[in-house]
Image 1 (cartoon, rainbow over the protein chains, first blue to last red):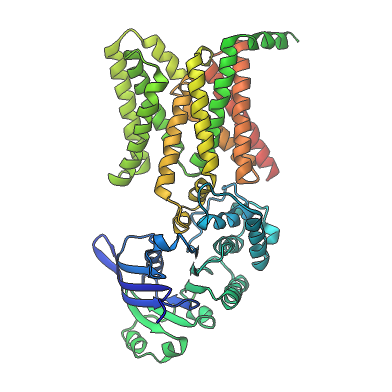
Image 2 (cartoon, one colour):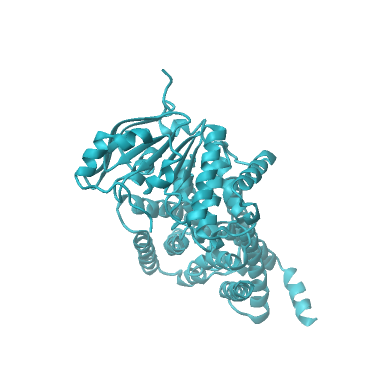
Length: 248
Length: 273
């Protein structure tokens, strides 16, 4: 049986001694499109950050059978963080500089750009429809444009897995659709694994092959069809928990 | 015409030539780092380390040693102490800087008052005396500046990555802690460089002012570093010439020229937007 792309065993994240997320067993296959849903504060972002080593955790998380730091030596994870609040509106980088910063992941010292890197940046910007933004300062773009620039950064070096944390949080409905269509097309064309965090099962439900419902632990993990008939979800909902938190 | 003749005559003097070379290289080193430090909100670290350099200069004068040689390792150690205090003691960034800075000043004052006999020398290091740069100091300045410029050029992409988005940099395998350490250590080097040029009280302005001037008009990250370099070198040159012509203190004049540039660039940036 082939090694899953991501294998999780006994993952536990604590905040000041209080457990905030427990995932005993979970696997993500190569080429899978996984939707991660759950109410506010259910640990969706914590889960993603624990996978990427951005928050302290215990347990085992293996990418291609290797710890994340080892995996990064030969492969790349595309990551679109949740909030744009880190983005300083006065930051002097152009959209093109930000996109190009995504190609250094697998380069060794001294990291230098090649003609192929510039070509890859051009291609991904065409794909996401942001070519005309290339020379503009990233801090002066709209939220949706910044989101697409950061997605281009995540994709410019072909990732083995693409992790999107609430990618539509800054987007209006048409922009949201454009973004999800682009991700679906990439997933279909390159068979990269996609993990997308969302409040909104309706928006991502059409695209994903599997759903993971979290509420500080795994409530459900399976296909979209199974999700609708899942006894664990029925039980969970009977206990008065919300299923979907729609965006306003 | 007379002014030009005076300046031409000035450039014939060895001490002015040394001042120009040391000043320009110091300015380049500061401006290469300044953009990263300002955007990472590390500007005050330079200020804190400058206060520490006051103590290291006092110590060097007591020991009759070369102040830059004594300051390089000690200010470097202080930079690591600030980082460690931030990471391990739970202090907020500003508090750690304040702690180390006030410790540096207090220690400097104690050394100066107990050492005695060198208060005039110490004063020249407080506010700089670029026209008294020695040949050894020129060589030290050249070496340290080139080290800073080379380190920033070779690690440009990692520095850019941690400046824009530290979390993403970590996910892409950048050794964020190591790069941050390098950035702070290089800052300690430019602080030492500036001791003789503008003095320990004004050195942080050489790091901050060209960078924030450049940020008003920059159209890309690389151009921000380029503009900051030009502003800082121009400020040093104009500052040295003005101070020579007007018989003003050179360090303060360089900083005031930097302020003028900032005012012009601020207005230009507002006008363009």
